[in-house]
Each structure stands twice: as C-alpha cells, then as structure tokens.
Amino acid sequence: MGTLVKSNNRLFPAIPSLFDDFFKGDLSGLSNLNQTYGETLPSINIKETDDRFEVEVAAPGMNKNDFKVELDNDNLTISAHKESRNEEKDDDDFYSRREFSYQSFSRSFSLPERMVQGEKITAKYRDGILNINIPKTEEAKIKPARQINIS
Image (cartoon, rainbow, N blue to C red; front, side, top):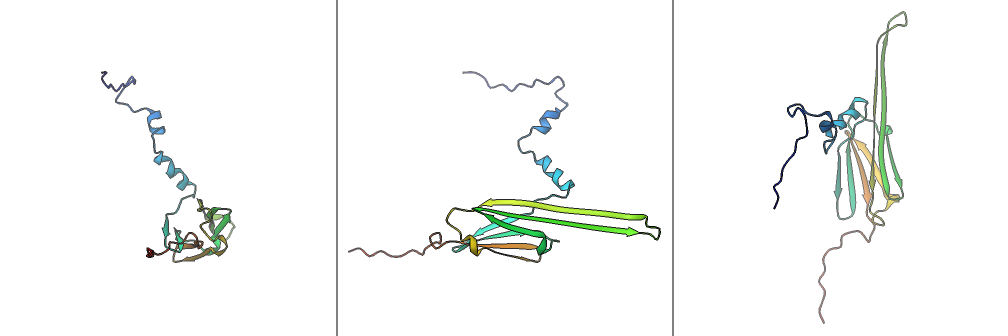
C-alpha cells in the first residue's frame, strides 16, 4: 500500500502563485467585477405553495417601468435596466459635476413543463420588491389526502 504524498512544485513555496488565485474553484472574487460596471444580481426568493409558485426579487430603487418579465416557452426571464444622469453646469456651460449611473440585471428560470399556467402569470412591484405569481395547472396542484374504502 502506497503513501499519500502532497507535492509542492513551487520554487518559492511561501509566495502564492498567480494561477492559484485565478483557478480557485469558486471564482467568487470575479463576482465583484460586475458590480464595478453597474451590473449586480438581486436576491431572489422562490416559494412553492399548493396552487402556485411565488417569486420575489429584491430590487430597491427601481421603478416598475425599469423591469421586463418575459415567458418564452418554459423559460421565465426577469430583467431590468435603469439609467440616471446628474449634471450640474455653471453659467458658461462648463460642467462642474457630471455623474452617470447604470444598473442592469437579467435572470432566467426554467419552469416545470406542463405544471404552470403561463397565460395567468402576474407581476407587481411595491416597496422595492418585484412579486411574480405563477399559478399551477390543475394537474400539478397538490391534492388533499383522501380515504379509500375497501370493499
């Protein structure tokens, strides 16, 4: 039976390799790159009840007109884009301050085939939360337990 040995092929083991940082399994450091350019992914809660799925998207500071909710076959796509500009000029038309802000995201979800009523999906935005209700079909609804008589 052989011995398990960990080999360190580095010339200077105390200095971390650039490749070690880049090729780590989770790449969580790269997720911050999107935030630099105004693209973030909002938190989303998905809840299943007996008769529907409820999706909650946390998107404070948005307006309902900033959102686009689309159903394409069994794919539900939630996206938003917001752009704001703030300019302060002096009397000579020179800018003393000019700021731009862009926010956007897009999330897609595969809905269970033949389990939802796509034509009855509704969405509402209130208090920074986009709520999407996705009704289930009659076949997909959970039926209460029933007693079966034995003859």
